[in-house]
Image (cartoon, rainbow, N blue to C red; front, side, top):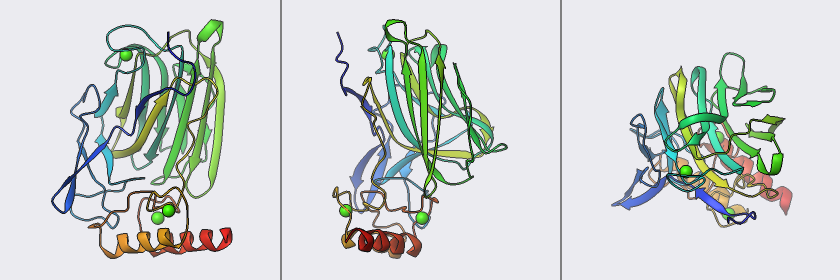
Length: 276
Ligand SMILES: [Ca+2]
Ligand SMILES: [Ca+2]
Ligand SMILES: [Ca+2]
C-alpha cells in the first residue's frame, strides 16, 4: 500500500558530477534512455562551447526529435500503475512544429496506453494535451522557460486531470478536464515524438500526492540558499561574467528567457530591494 501523502517518486533526475573545474552531467538515474537522448550537459549561462540553457543547477537535458528519457518508478518497475500521479518539469520552448515533451503511459518503457501527453506546439503557441480531454493552454512564447505541473487522478472512480503552466517572467495558465481510466506506469521526458530542432527540459519531479502541489522553484534564488537577497544578484553577475565557468547552483534566469545576463542580476536586485 502506497502512501497517499507527498511521496516522492522521482526528482531532479539530471545528475551533476564535479569533474575538475567543470561538470559532467548524466542521465543514469533514469530507467531508460530511449532513443539515445542526446545526453545531459552542463548548461552554460552565456553559451560556452557545448553549453546550453538550464533552469536550475548545472545540468539540463537537451533532446532532438525522438530523444527522451523514461522513468519507470510509477507503480514500481515491471508491474502496477499509479492511480494518483503528479509531475512537474521545466521546458525551454525552443523547438519548432509540434513536439511531445512529456508522455505518461500504462506500461513501463513508454509502452501501453497513453494516460497523459503534453505537446508544445510552436505554430499555435500552446501546450496541448492528449490521453486526456482538456483544452490547450495558449499564449506560450517561443524560447522561454515554462514550468508544467500535471495531476492525473483515476483513484476510486475519479477521472480528473489538471495542468498548471507558469513561466516567461510572469505568465500563468491552466487547464482541467477528464482523465482516462488508465493508471500510470512510466513517464517520458524530452522530445518523445514530433517537432523539429531541440527542446531543453529540466527539474523533473513526480509524486503520488493527491493534494499537495509540487510547485515552482524560487525565481532568483541564484545560489540555492532558500532565500533571496543581494548574494543572489552577485551570484548571477558572477555567472555571466565568468561566461559559464561558474554556474550558479540555483535559479539565476530571473526573466526566464534562456540566457543569463545583466538583466537577470538587475531583476534580482529589484526583487531584493522590494522585499527589503
Ligand atoms: Ca513502473
Ligand atoms: Ca539565495
Ligand atoms: Ca535571463
